[in-house]
Length: 247
Ligand code: ADP
Image (tube, rainbow, N blue to C red; front, side, top):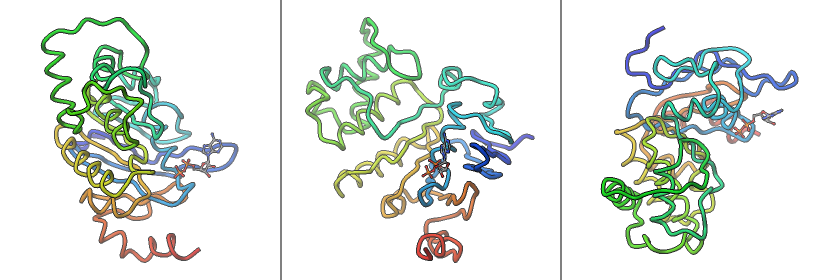
């Protein structure tokens, strides 16, 4: 079924593990250039949803599409190659390499999990690395090793590494966990900036951060969509209040 401008389209997606429904008839549409926040209590199915999109977990039922591609038939590497990048909570950079070198490696690496390769740097590549460093706010740290960066800077470097691969859809898992307030603000501004040219889906617990994103919010609970809309809308939704406060 065609949905205008849908980059990501989930319809009736269920995932059952040993009789337990981690996702239960979940539907979601993310449009081109959209920034979407996904919130929900622990066990709501947020990670499982990301795993279904990236091909790590197969849905038991339902449709998962990226443009016209049926993702339920594709493996993880193929899905990454279509232009879906995922940032996990734990960074996967090389601590002994500098910020610049990590970005360079990400540019030359195949999409998907990073591997160590030989590479040759041309001028276009250098410009792309420099513009990405500026975009994530790490220009001043270009020649510092990743291992000496702060927690926040490492997260931004990793987002930069994903951007080097030109994803059309970026999935970001709990980016501000453990960040200072200032780092959290920087991260919100960064994600707002990079959406637009691409779609970004962010899973996050920190509601102040989600508010700073200013984006549409989807609330998951028990594997289904509980509420959707602006942060004010979902925070005032009695069903959401019950789930967050009523336990
Ligand atoms: P969230 O990310 O919102 O905290 P998850 O997607 O990680 O939620 O988990 C949803 C539910 O599915 C949880 O109850 C979890 O225990 C269960 N679950 C997740 N992965 C598996 C698995 N591989 N096998 C069995 N149960 C799982």
